[in-house]
Image (cartoon, rainbow over all chains, first blue to last red; front, side, top):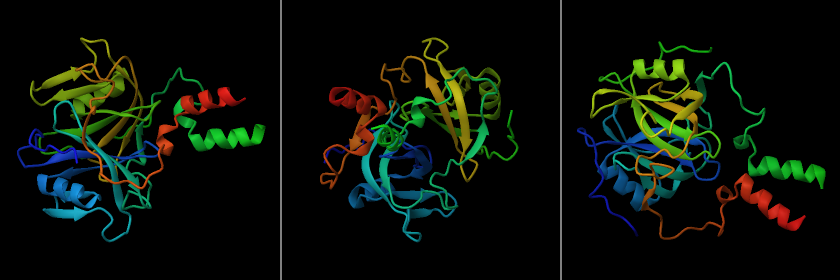
Length: 135
Length: 135
């Protein structure tokens, strides 16, 4: 196990933001906070554990809903103060029932010079479906 | 412009974490902090502006390097306390020269039951390249 936590920089409250990303689709699912104990439990169990700032205790994502997150990879950033956790999401990530917690759009520029369908819209599934229609 | 900032919840320091994601590849590029002023400048200019906690001032990503981020979409999460900003990254996101700030791997499970190449490895470019070899 390639693990070295000593260089990570938790904040004054002992916390670090963790961006949770679907390892398959690349979608950003949620952001939550980890302290060292929750990070160690995440690594020990292979499932995501966070620290709830409101409840002031650890929580295991999906412990009641069953919508657990199986850890695929964990990265840290150049400042060593943020984590990126790539997961296999079981069910949906958001407690409101959405696949991602980022389901509310705040802003889209009025003018874009983009092609009608950007590359990111072509998922492997979409491409293969298109191809089945052609071949 | 579909914009409503009044429901956003900035923290006690007036800040909110912003996850920056490449709109084309889906890669998570960095996490930085915005206050309301930097969010408004981001929206007004179409480029990312953040608040530097160490320098205690606003900064425009790419102002010295030229590696700007053109805003495509901004989302907020179910708690309204985190932003997800999808961008077109010019050059690289990390000041260390990496495409993403999350270039350091902390942990990978010793055992995975995954197929050798996961779905996420098949980008549209990879799929099309494979197909050109077959057709």
